[in-house]
Amino acid sequence: MAAMGCCHYYAPSAGGDDAFSIDVSAITFGAGVLNELGDHARARGIERIALMTDKVLGGLEHVAIARESLIDAGIDVVLYDEVRVEPTDRSFLAAAHFAGEGDFDGFVSVGGGSVIDTCKAANLYSTHPAEFLTYVNAPIGGGQPVPGPLKPHIACPTTSGTGSECTGIAIFDLLAMKAKTGIVSRHLRPTLALVDATCAATLPRNVVAASGFDVLSHALESYTAMAYTKRAAPERPSLRPMSQGANPWSDLGCREALRLLGEYLVRAVEDAGDSEARGQVMWAATLAGIAFGNAGVHAPHGMSYAVAGLVRDFRPEGYPHDAPIVPHGMSVMVNAPSVFRFTASACPQRHLDAAGWLGAETRGAGEEDAAEVLSERLISLMRVTGMPNGITGVGYGEADIPALTEGAYPQRRLLDNAPRPIGKDELNGLFRNALAYW
Ligand SMILES: NC(=O)c1ccc[n+]([C@@H]2O[C@H](COP(=O)([O-])OP(=O)(O)OC[C@H]3O[C@@H](n4cnc5c(N)ncnc54)[C@H](O)[C@@H]3O)[C@@H](O)[C@H]2O)c1
Ligand SMILES: [Fe+2]
Image (cartoon, rainbow, N blue to C red):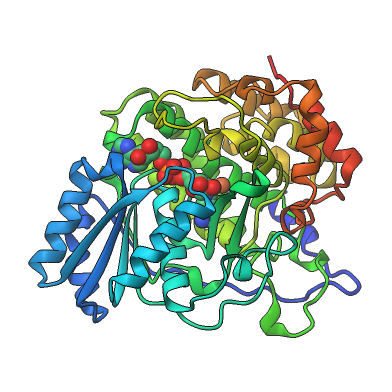
């Protein structure tokens, strides 16, 4: 049944693309693999490396293990622990400045998405210097292609979250515009993802929950994205975007990530000592990163950039309290039930399948029930893990909907990857329906 839905989903369409392209990541996954870092770096010819992290992680054992492994391999290591959690253009530039001064021949990031993305930007601007907005996504930035390969970058994620170790994306908050945006290029993809599942043991509960919902939404958005056959064929094959829409390869990672999250997410949030659950969510994060890096996400992420960018005074547990932030996973998830209620009619079987993998009871449910079955499952997972109750839960009210709509509307790369058209009226309705869920 699912397989039939699948074939039908990729039926050819007039003017649509007739192929999909996959960029694979080099991955090493396992408990304790941070100890392998030095050897992997040396095998890539690195002699002097910038080790990037944030202040919290700088005091934990993961960074110490990484550093020791590099030193044991005879590599010159310089530590940079100034990464900002939820980075900005200013913090990206500070890291790029450090990278430009240090005469490095390689980079390693040990941290969550904030650290990995900052390291990508530092590598980019120190290798191919340019005005900051040059490579930033249009229409906010110049959207210029990255001119060529970067220096080797080994990404070691410490959150069970973004999957940034497998993507060619770097996201930041553009302070002047109060909007999140990003840089997207195949050249940004790290040379190696070194995923040590034991890093998850020290994560605060709220970070496991927020970054776990980021993973969940990556998988769900990629699985329900517009089919690649419905996106207009590129002018030249080499211009096929990474955000190419749902495709059979990405479906594999999405399906398994959703199944793992259905089984392990709540356990991983509740018990830091449950190494099985935390390790499996870490694997789900990597799988979803592979999937969405080759398919693209859609509306929950497009809307999240406004939810995060316009933050007023939200300071959640488990995150640094020096500045108000809506952590990425929360800013995404508060929109998700509203969006999937709206998109279900475009591909109901896919929504129903996803609900089942996430642990919902789908026996007896038909396609007309897909919107409710999936959104109710998402809401119940949000409630048991202590997620904010919709956009009200992170500090917004009805009066903020016009500003949120204006902030999200320019995110066309994401919104146009949704399975239904989304203009200003739809965005307005989606935010309205995301105000509160219980
Ligand atoms: N590039 C991509 O493909 C991509 C995808 C999704 C999200 N993102 C971006 O990634 C960022 C979010 O990253 P994140 O969710 O991984 O969290 P994060 O990097 O922002 O870290 C969250 C908090 O957890 C702490 N922390 C991290 N690992 C820890 C550990 N093992 N033990 C204890 N504390 C730990 C950090 O110090 C920080 O305080 C956002 O900026 C988001 O936009 C990027
Ligand atoms: Fe994300």
